[in-house]
Image 1: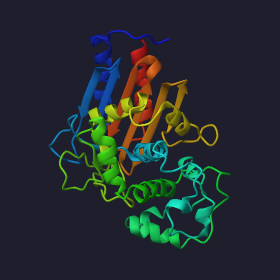
Image 2 (image 1 turned 180 degrees about the vertical axis):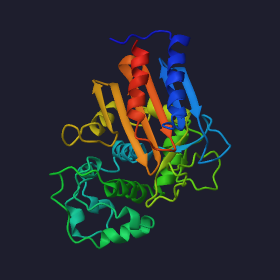
Image 3 (image 1 turned 45 degrees about the horizontal axis):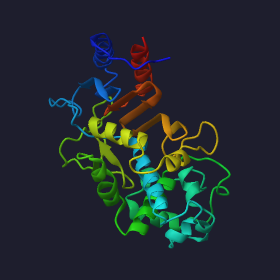
Image 4 (image 1 turned 90 degrees about the vertical axis):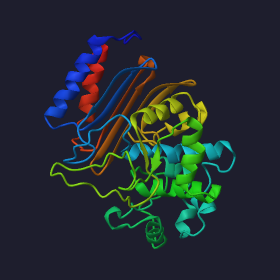
Length: 321
């Protein structure tokens, strides 16, 4: 079994060689952080902030973390539950009153477990939150009876964020900034950045074409390495929601399905592991937090190569040698 120990240069150097080799092959452009026992074991930044730029990445650059940002709406829902402002058994229609009758069938717990039956957003055709909501108002029936089937669905996420906004009277983005990031000391997190914002790594494909940064729906938290780690530790130490609420979020509809926190395990009131990956166009991110090993690995890229899993496995092998 992996034991906590004081890692020296013999761990840092092979990780550095691994990441440099990946960058030189053109299979990694981004940032990596390895923490062990709360101490930084390795940090590396590789490549430009966007295609063909002479400006190189540093650890301060913020990245879109894709679906990992869905943790923020899941945690926000549980925060409101703990404040007795909602129940997970509440019908969607209780908090979002301008939807068709099918909203009476959907519970908040269905949204968290991606089992609502709401048709997915027409992602490529959607031009913002109002457009997405108007499209949902035109839906006449659900794809299936809520709670009977799993479908990973951005409209479940959209509805969670809308519930937070309707209950609190502030936008979801403001709620995240004021009630989540600020209390945790996450100083550089940003919601839905634009090309005008500074210190944003802009994603691009292998042909050097930069992604459109405008999301079809709002609510996407962008983080740099250090704030990403701070968020992970806040989940591990239950700074925003209780162990019971965290455990509830980690229960999948069935084995292998994603939850509001991706995947994870707990034992009593202790978080054992938390793993979540996210993709948004050519952004990709991966968080691996193995609390039994005292180890956290964060990988962020703005040039998706679908290899963060293999890179993290290689880092884990180095750490376990």
